[in-house]
Amino acid sequence: MKDVGYGPRGSTTVKTRKTTQCSSAQKKMSFPGRSSLLSSLICAAWVITILAEGQQIEQPEVATKYGRLKGKWVTVKGTDRLTNVFLGIPFAKPPVGALRFSPPQPAEPWISVRDATSFPPVCLQDQAILEKCEEIFPTKQLNFSTSEDCLYLNIYTPAHSNEKAKLPVMVWIHGGALLLGGASMFDGSALSVYENLVVVTIQYRLGITGFFSTGDEHARGNWGFLDQVAALQWIQENIKHFGGDPGSVTIFGESAGGVSVSLLVLSPLAKGLFHKAISESGVALLSAMFSSHPEVIAKVVANLTGCDTSSSAAMVHCLRKKPEEEMILNFQQQQQVSIIPAVIDGVFIQKNPEELMAGKDFSAVPYIIGINNHEYGWVLPFAYNIPGLKEGMHKETILSTLQMLHPLLSVPAEFVSLITDEYLGDTDDPVALRDQFLDLMGDATYLIPAIKTSNYHRASGSPVYFYEFQHRPSSASFKPDFVKADHGDEMSFVFGGAFLTDETSLFASRDATAEEEHLSRTIMKYWANFARNGNPNGAGLVEWPVYDMNEQYLELSLQQKEAKKLKGNRVEFWTKTLPEKIKKMKEKKEHAEL
Image (cartoon, rainbow, N blue to C red):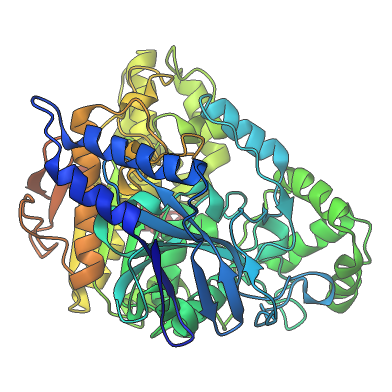
């Protein structure tokens, strides 16, 4: 009934004659006026019926360097091909006790076959923030357990793959402001099976446990970024057993995940661990991601948990002894102390990111960089509790909000008026003011850092491909009508949300239109071509131009279109006009003080 093939101590490919017969029968079926989707659904039902009748398809097993894993297979909509899924694979020791605030250590091997069929807990984070996310996404429930023991990854690989397959590997790094999120919120099955590649989703420590730093040798910080490096090292050692090619690894991520990708491109620790990169809505040139004085924040954190702050050693020793419950309480309180997570530690990241980029001191790999056309449309303002979005905003509200958010603008508070003069003008119309404010924030935090990063990377001689995602998903009906392609809206298209069978998945799109299904297939194809060749272009796709001195890019919507110089006037303002005005104001102030 079935043939089970094992590579030499490697991946197991499970083949069943029933599923092969299903493919043959599908070719014989004729459904006039209907798509092949119907026949695929019938085949999927056939396989499920076989299982119900007791004719079990064996669960896939893989032997890794650390021990054997038993996974499971899943189906996706629109095809009878199966995906082998392995969940909760440890890539490092649990970072608890003495390993809290320490670099990740290699995972311990196991003896018996390890069950890899259920999601691991997400890394320690404030459940209140997750509940806030449920307010933002009212159609989804984020029921994930949290734990400090969280350094796990999930793997999705086509069921036919074996050690000789050498499929391209795409490693997803989730976003969430380095404070929340998890690998299990992302289902890689559709991307894997439709594009015949291996998808890996990884976890890393977050918030205090991920980025606490005393600024010295006692706790350098950036533990979450070091976890990402450890996951990439594990992938280099083991991904061949899942049919993946360790010589063809693409890292991709969104928001804080895009920032992480950008930092991995800059980090000497990650050199050689990946070969292409994709940053969606986030790069390393967001200055608010870094703390210049982590020791000040460290003392606030220690005080919140009643620890001695007389020395770095005393703080770290005390905090390592605190139970997980107290660390969760600290997570809840940290919003009051405005913790800025990352540091220039001299280990993971050697210098200020812009210095590294300007000096071409980074991994010169092919790079896709992009943004959405309404990054500050709804999700981020809602998260920041910015009032009056639906009705409009008054200028006084905008000015006070910008004083609070000015670190995100990468401009000192005294120069914020130069920005508001440019964007707000003389209007008093609340709707127009709201729209300009949202554009201002999106440009400052996403557009300008992305363009600058693209320019620096282009100068290294490596190919850069830039995009602007422009489609408002049909699933965004809960958002006000003025919102266009909001922060994160592209992810359901990247992961084939319309084809996911697990509709509880965060990015499953059961109401996707036929046009949106086509857009998802198009974006998956662009991303997969890039993972295969370092170039997103291929047969049947609109040509995506290289981002060269003409600053060409691709508009990603239901119809794709080549364009150039995205928001050129705004880029000119932020990169030339504003710096010149700030320089003149500083010189005038210095002259007045003489």
